[in-house]
Length: 213
Ligand SMILES: C[S@@+](CC[C@H](N)C(=O)[O-])C[C@H]1O[C@@H](n2cnc3c(N)ncnc32)[C@H](O)[C@@H]1O
Image 1 (cartoon, protein in one colour):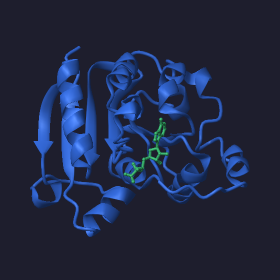
Image 2 (tube, protein in one colour):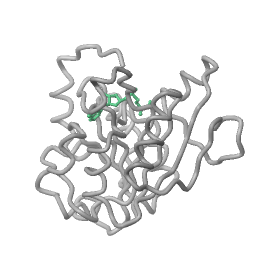
Image 3 (cartoon, helix red, strand yellow):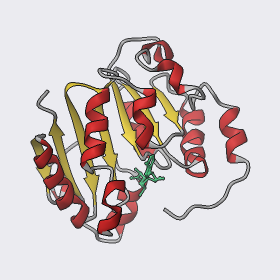
Image 4 (cartoon, protein in one colour):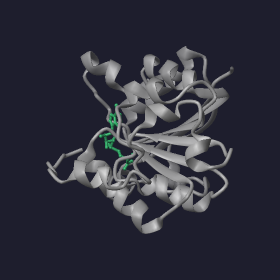
């Protein structure tokens, strides 16, 4: 993603602690206090400008959602969406996914969405891929037993790598589409990248995998 420096982003984030949680460490193991209910929590890691997670939260009020994004200059676009939609079941976190274990503990999360994650094609950058085995351990450590990962991408190389990584980790493949937009899968909520890449004619891959414990 091309990043534009936005010097005002930090201040804007600090002005909206009701939407972008400012002290997430304090809610580890008790996110129900933030949402004020015991609904399951689904997180999108690398949420970008937040279209997917906002539309999911609108469509599924019985689920809590959290969009996690590393860059403040990107998450402010998701913040604008959330200010506009004002959804009680959606929050944002401006943190690095590598630190998820600081903010969540076992059983906090029921599902992880990975949408159009950065492919990091060079082999020396494998550890940065969000489907690398260390990330799969990280997700398992914060999820309920039999938690799920739902993954979409237009990048064939990353998709094949991820299927292999999931399989080697012992995750169970429960859904796969090698051409999502020409399948009968629905409802498909599109992400910003999905719209852009499918308009360019790229094929969209999608899978769902489940931890066995
Ligand atoms: C290619 S974009 C896709 C954005 C969105 N999911 C979509 O499909 O439109 C990947 C996003 O993941 C974020 N990201 C990458 N690594 C991350 C990490 N370790 N922690 C949090 N966010 C990360 C990037 O900053 C970027 O916004």
